[in-house]
Amino acid sequence: MRLRGIQIPRSFWRKWLQSSRFTAWKERLCTLTFTPLSGRSWWVIVITASVAAFLVAAFVSTRLMAAEIVPDFVHGYHPGALGIQKGAGYVDQSGELITRWPPGMSTFISPWVVDDVVESARNLRFVSGFLALGWVVFVAYLMRLLIPRVSILLALGIAVFWPPMWAMGDPTRSEMLFTFLSSAGMLALVCLYRRRSSPIFTTVALTIAAWVAFAAAALTKTLGIAVALAMFVGIAFGFHSWSIRRRIAVLLLSASVFAAGLAPWISAYRDHTGHYGFTSNGLESVRHGLVRYPHFPLGLELKERSADWRSYDDMWTDIRELAAADRGGAFRLLGIKTVRPWYATWSGRFDHYLLVVQLPWFLLFVLASGRTMWRWKQIPGEVILLHGYVAALWLTAALVAPILRYLSPAFPFVVIIVLWHALDANLLGEKTGEPRELPAEENIR
Image (cartoon, rainbow, N blue to C red; front, side):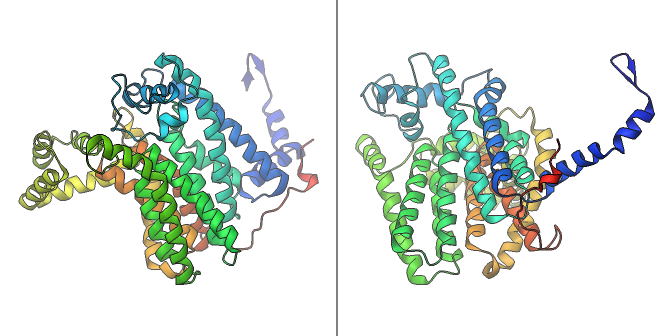
C-alpha cells in the first residue's frame, strides 16, 4: 500500500489492526455510539453537538442558500422588522399593516436588521446559530427523558445532523425560530406530564411557560396553531395517568395563556381588515400547493379553478365537485400530497435523492403511529404529544404546500418516536441498559 508516495507494508496494517491501541479506540467508538452515557460524557457530546449546530446554522446553511434571499424575508420579515425598529409598527414600505405573515419573526429580528436586505441577512447568521444551539439542548433533554437507553451521540447525530436538516439554519427563513420555540414548549409539556404529583405552583409555571412558547411559535409561523391544537388533544386524551379534573384545569389555563398571546395580533388584524383572522396568505398558500400536478386531469382542473377562488367556500365547493366526479384522481392527489411533505422541495432539484433518504423514516413513523393507535392506553402521554406535533405539521403541509421545509421541525421528534417504539417493542435488545459513565481504563491516552 502507498500513502503519498510512501510504500507501507501490509504487515504494518495487520499489526496495527491487531494492536491494543486500535482495539481500545474501536471499543471507545462503539461505546460512544451505542452505549447510553450520563454525567460529564453526556454533556461533552451535547455541547459539541450544539457548537456544531451553531456552525451549520451560521455558516454552512448560509452558503447552501446563498443564491437567493427568500421572498418572505424581502417582502415581509425585513420591512416589518424595520417598521418595528423605527417605531412605525408592523408595516411594509408603504405604511400598510402586513397581513400575509404574523409578526413574530419580524419582532424577533428587529434589533439586528438594517436598511440593506443582504446585510441584514448576514447579521442574522449568528442569531440563527444561537437558536440552533439552544434547540439542540432542548432536543437532547427530550432524548434524555424519553430514550435514555439510546446513546445520545447516535440519537442526536441523526436527529439534528441528518442532511435534509442543514437548510433549516437559513437566517432569512422563520423555521429555525419556530423550531426553537415549539421545541421549548414541547419540553415544558413533557416535564409537566412526568411530574404527576407536582405542587400547584410547578404545574402552573410549566403550563404557562409551555403555552407562551407555543403562542410565540404560532405568531412566527401560522402552522403553530395546528401544533397547539394537537397539544390540546394530546393533553385531553393522552395524559392517561392524570385525573380528568387535573387535565381540565391544565387545558383551561393553557387555552387562556395561548389566547392571550394571540389576542393582540388578532385584534390588530381585525382593525385593519374588518374581520377576524390570522393571515391573509392562507388561500394563496393552498393555490401554490396545487400548481405542480397538471400531469393528470384532476390536478390540472384544480390548478385552473384555483385562480378564481376568493374564499375557502369557493375552494371547498370546487374540491367536492371535482372529487365526486373523479374519485381515482382524488385518491391520487391525496396520496401525492400525503407523501410529498417527507421529501419534496420547491425547486424539485433534489427530490429524488431526498426521497431515498427520507422514505425509511416515513415508513417507520407510519408503523410507529399504527402501534400507538393499537396500544393507546399503554403509550405514555409524552410520546403521544410528540406524535401529535409531527401529525400537525404533516397534515398542515399536506393541506397547504407539501414540502419538506414545513415538516423539518418535526424530524427530531420522528427519530425519538421511532427509537422509543423500537425500545418498547424490545427490538434493540434486552431492557437492561442504563446510562453510565465511561470507565477510566477505557480512555485512550
